[in-house]
Length: 519
Image 1 (cartoon, rainbow, N blue to C red):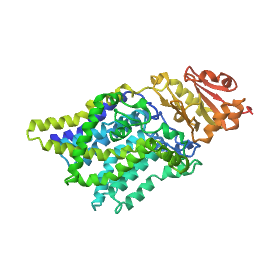
Image 2 (spheres, one colour):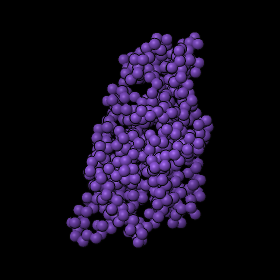
Image 3 (cartoon, rainbow, N blue to C red):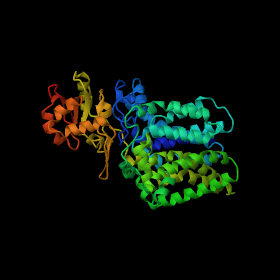
Image 4 (cartoon, rainbow, N blue to C red):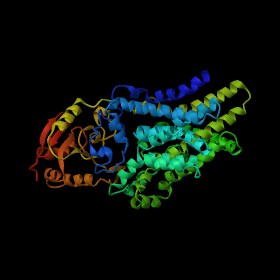
């Protein structure tokens, strides 16, 4: 009874260690993670029908529907805590064929690793939801592989959870096919296609069809970590392109030593699986997905010319630009190998106290060497409140009769507002206001500009640089302009603001109508 209670409680313990400061009142806004009080369900871009590449399809639609009954602040907390709890509980279920100590060790690594830390800080919450679904998908698909017939919801629900974004949808489909095996994957593969249809249809309905600027290959290439190069970063589930979100502990020698220990334990687990035993079938099922993960993650770093051609020419090729995302496919295999290796090593220790000590160290070591995932990634993730002025601006926009879309200025993809404690976040205006909003989709990384794919955003950028920006914006179908007065570059908009009609003006944000006679 006590062992079962410990197994059920451990995922909650880890989730709360990470998410405790995020449970305060407000929203956690970090890079791509933007939740708002209510995402308007009538906006075309929520359903992938806007001009921008539908990267947030169907995740934005799911949030908009959920917002009809659940406020944004609560929904975000449920998503973040729930993802980590579900990931841990799923890993415990996936590793149920091993003893409790080995289960806990493999589960700890599955939850407490650089992939989870980096994707959490950069705000890829749909990817974390998909990551949480992977072990549950493995459990169901292993049963299919072995000739069983699990209840449909046991594999359909995890597959659907992976389909909240294009990249995560690919991850779920690849893992399902890998684990089921080619002979028995037909039904699962068909369902994988069906649950991913929202973003597939929306993607091919756009002119770019998922193609991207090849300059993004170098920018998004997997980066070295822990002093072990790019391959070492990949094999330790790290290497995200944005080095600002990497835990500081990954630069310490302890991270290097831990990786060497981790790989040794995995090697022992691999040998154990090779010789037979409980790990053999899961390892065989998971190896193809892990190989695919490493190939996608490393191609941009080692053979960039190939990936540049793919993202520029092949429809949907842009999905491979951030290859490190696909390391999620490696995580289930590593969790199994860790559990198998720990079980084998502990089994060689005869003394009961020594065996328990080995298991405790194996369980707690990932946390000890990367403590800065705890407490909201060492304070990087804390809840804040939107300024009251944002609600007033939203009301002004909702009451406006001006025809046309909204544009957010200064025209840049990211903000670092003081009310968010200076943390970088994707411009919240893109989701906050009840009107289709044109935002900049160009990305500047270390001086390199990665071109966007939204023709509408490009037209607005040109309009702002024209001799008569107000008239050109009106000609482009822009009826309203919202200006973040505290953002970098706002001081350069005085001339444009003078030509617009103010609807609401606060200390941090202002809303203007583009005059209908601005032609």
